[in-house]
Image (cartoon, rainbow, N blue to C red):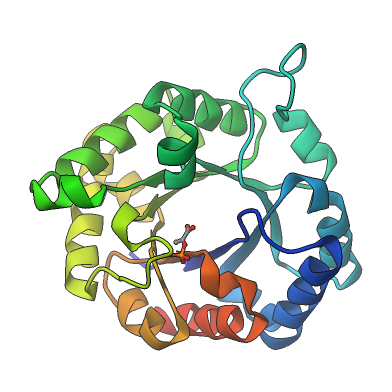
Length: 259
Ligand code: PEP
C-alpha cells in the first residue's frame, strides 16, 4: 500500500509572529511546491494561528495550519482553554493530541488525550495522536507495550470512518529534543508493531492506509534513511522545523521517500 508521506513542524513555544511568518514564507518558497507529494502542516502557537493562517492563505500554499493542542469541551468556564470551533475559526485543519511534553510536562492522561482526539474528529478536523516510551520504559523493554496502551486508549471510541482522519506519531520521549534518534531499524520495528495494533483495532486495510510518522531529533541528515523504512510515513519535527532550510530539506526527503 502506498501512503502519502506526512510531515509536521511542531513549533512548540517558539517564534514571534514576525519570525513565524518569515519561517512559513521560507518553507513555502523552498518546499511549498511539494505538497502534492507530501502533506505538510505547521503546528503553531495559539496566539499566532490567525496570523500564520493568513500567510498560508496569501501565498496560496497547500501547507495546513495545525494546532498543538485543544480542549474537548465546546465552550464555557474553562479558563485558558481553546475549543475545536475556535481553532476552526482560525483555519486549523489538524490538531496534535498527547504530545510527550503535554503528557510528561503538563501531566495529561490517556483519558484526557482520548477526549481531545474524539473532539477533534467530531469537529471534522484531522488528529495526530502521539505515542512513545520514556527512556526508563525503553530500558525495561516496554516500548511496544507503552505504544500499544497509548494507541488503544487514545483511539477508544474512534469509528472506522473517523480513523481515516487519524495520523499516529511515534515519538520515543528520550529522542525528542535530545539529538538522539532511534535507529531506522528500531523505529521501523516500533512502527510495524503499532500498525499491527491498528489492524487489530480496525482492519488490515485501514491499518495499512494509516500514516505513522516518526518524531525524535529528525534532521536533514537522517530524514531520508528514516523515511525510507517501509512503515515510516514521514515525520513530526520539533527543533529542525524552526529553520526553513532544514525543514524544507526534510520535506524534500519525505517527498522522495515513497517514489
Ligand atoms: C517533537 O517535538 O515532536 C519533536 C520530535 O522534537 P525534536 O524534533 O526537536 O526532537
